[in-house]
Amino acid sequence: MKINITEEKQNSALKRKELIAEIEYDGPTSSKAELQKMLSETLNVDIKKIEIKKILSHIGKAGGRLWANIWEEKEVPIYAELKKPKEAKPKEEKREEAPKEKSKEEAKPVKEKPPEPKPEKVEEKKEKAEAKPEKDGAKE
Image (tube, rainbow, N blue to C red):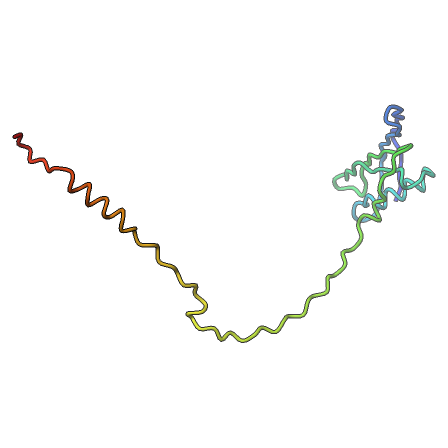
């Protein structure tokens, strides 16, 4: 893999160096971890100070463009350490299920009947009905 730095800019306000580089590689596009390691070796800079912002592959060519920052104070995580393989979780042994001997009645919950209307209210309605005189439509 070859790295050719095409543009280098010092950003003193953010205390970093901004790089644009052309990269040539064989096979698939290089990962951020590989490029971070190559830049640290090429520029003699601590790997924790290099941040890979973007990798853009050229269509139909084994190469691409790289945008990176080299920080003076800030430490960036090492990409190779971030992508650790996940540990396989040990599968729990299946518990032996107790045989199902429940009857259908036990399995279904018993529904409670709604409470019957109170007799007082029924009596009140009867009294109101008796108190109202019926209208025959004819006036007396």
